[in-house]
Amino acid sequence: MKIKQKIYILIIIIFILAVFLSPLSSSLPDGLEYVAEKLGFVEKISPPVLNSPVPDYNFAFIKNQYISKAFAGAIGVIIILLSGWGIERLMRRKK
Amino acid sequence: MHIPDGFLANEVWIPAAVISTAALSLSVRNSNKQLLDKSIPRLGIISAFIFAAQMLNFPVAGGTSGHLLGAALAVALMGPWLASVSLSLVLIIQCLLFQDGGVTALGANIFNMAFVGVFTAYFIQKLFLVNSKLFNFGIILSAWFSVVTASFACALELYLSNITPFLFVVPAMLIIHSLIGIGEAIITVAVYFSICKFIPDIGNISLAKNSAEK
Image (cartoon, rainbow over all chains, first blue to last red; front, side, top):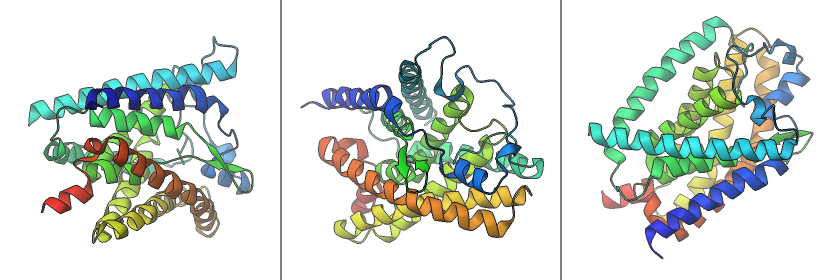
């Protein structure tokens, strides 16, 4: 298999993880949230200083939370792929 | 362990932001030397994989969940400088786009995960660069320690922000993240070997190969 084909397969796998698997992942609190709840400082969380367009991986206009998270996963992967690619190109040019 | 807005005092998040900015610019500068192969958009692919993997929370004993941090994986595949750029990119997008981690805490989150986590993994992997068998063991160990040291840094920042006593928050964070670290170790070693088998070229600036060349 050529390297290009392998790269496409890798990208497909990444999309499968972010789009199809992420909506099924555990929604239990993460380690820090859990500790904050147990030690009673969770109420110190303030409203976000900057409003994100997609808070908590949920699009307000998509009713179904699974579809919403899948969509967020896809958008995130695309943005990171492109920006990572761009940063790498910029760093090469500087060299 | 993405810290939200409100937890950190100004005396903590402002210095953390300054330190992370300086560290990140150092990383970008040093990364230049590691960008050898033009045929693979390494930074984008590995960062996107880490982002996707961080969305996959697995349940951990006692009503909590964890997900891959990816620091040890990134270090094994592209060395510490590019790894910290990669983790920072993921954290910045998570924060700005998805409100995962507060904007004021972004510097601290980058410091904990993209620097403390990444360089812990790097030094441990370097220690085990004796032969390939030992290196495999080093990857497992580095994955576990990267999560635990990052959580320790996070706990320290919470304590320094005066919202919780040292003797409560440090043990609590370390215990939970030593459990999450087991998941990190299993996923890291499984993904690392799959990638090395399937597309070895992507890791061709890995620690292992770098040292083999020397």
